Every structure is written in structure tokens, then in C-alpha cells.
Image (cartoon, rainbow, N blue to C red; front, side, top):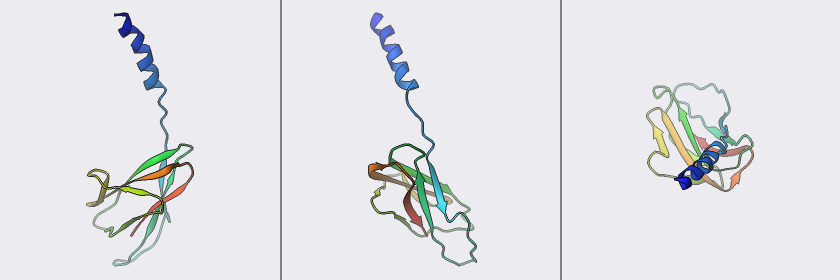
Length: 114
């Protein structure tokens, strides 16, 4: 019984000490004017907010009746993660996941959506 009681404070300390970061994905430009049938490209940028990120998963939602993404290109250095649930484009959702060797520590381009 003593071993169980000694392990609980250690496990509790591990869960309490886990930091949570509020990284953001920014869309550049933030606004644009287009007409029906126009092609537009926007850049997604990762702001790690002081953290060190080696993997980023971007989830964007859009109105499927107004927009149709046709392509996504990762910015240089990013390595795509193309597993189910990590890579989707269509039906009102764009999900792209990529790894960055050495980690991102400042605002960095993630990719371009057309």
C-alpha cells in the first residue's frame, strides 16, 4: 500500500506541471474582395506564442457554398502528415498537419490555400 500512496503525488505533479500553449493560425490577408469565379490565395501563418512547436495541425472552416479550396501547398521546411484525420480539404473543412524539423519558435509561414 505504501508504494501506491507514494506514486500518487508524483503522477499528480506530472499532470499539473504540463504547460498549455495558445498558438494561433493567422490567415493573410485577413480580408479580400473577390467576384464569383475568381481565384484567390491566402497564406496560413503559425504564431507559437512563445512555445516551441514541432507539429502543427491547422483546422479551418468555411462556407462550402461560397468557397471551394482547390490546392494547399506547405511552406518550405514543413513535412506533411497525410494520415486520416490530419489531412482533409472539402466539405466546409480544411485540416492540414505538418511537422517542422527543429521546431518553430516565432511566427512562420505554414502554407498557402488556393
